[in-house]
Length: 199
Image 1 (spheres, rainbow, N blue to C red):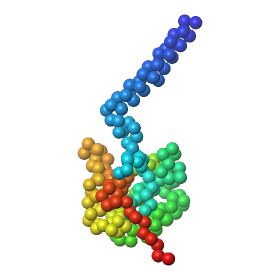
Image 2 (image 1 turned 60 degrees about the vertical axis):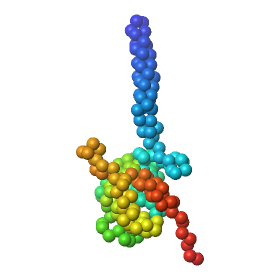
Image 3 (image 1 turned 120 degrees about the vertical axis):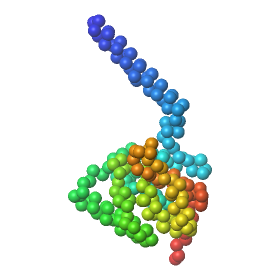
Image 4 (image 1 turned 90 degrees about the vertical axis):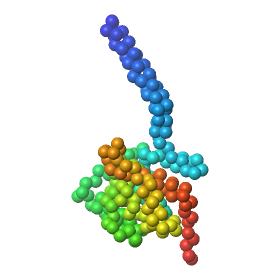
C-alpha cells in the first residue's frame, strides 16, 4: 500500500508539473516573446482578412501570381495531411506527373527561356513548403509581369525585395515566401482583373 500511494502521488505531481504548469508557462512565454509566431504566423491581406500562414504553402493558379512548389499533402496543400508522395525515381506515376507539370509550365511560361527549376516540378517532403528559391521565382517573372501589365524589371525588383537570406548567414539557402510575394504584388499593383474571353 505505501508503494501504491507513493506512485499515485508521483503521478499526480508529474501530471500537474509537466501536463499543466509547464505547458502554461511555455504558452505564456511564447505569447509575450513572439506572439505572431506563437499564433501560427498568420498573414492578412489589405482588408485585414486572414489569407494563410507564412509557414504553410498554398496553391496559386492564376497567371498573375507566382506559383508554389507542387504538393503531395492530401489533395494538395492540406495542412492536416502533411507528407511527401513517397514515390521513388523509378515510379511511373511520379514521372508522368512531372512530365505533365513540365508541359504545363512550358505552355504557361513561353517567355521563360532557362530550363525549369526542379523545385517547380518536385514536391517537398512535407508537401507544405511555403518557399521557393530566388531562381524559381525569377523564372516565373515574364509570365507574372505580362499578366499584370508590368515590365519584367519591376516584377523582378519585387522578387529581389522578398529574398530572405540564409539563417544566421550560414544555414540553408536564400528563399522567397510565395504568399508574401503575391500579397506584395497585389498591394503594389492591385489585384489582377479577370480578362473577358472573346466569344
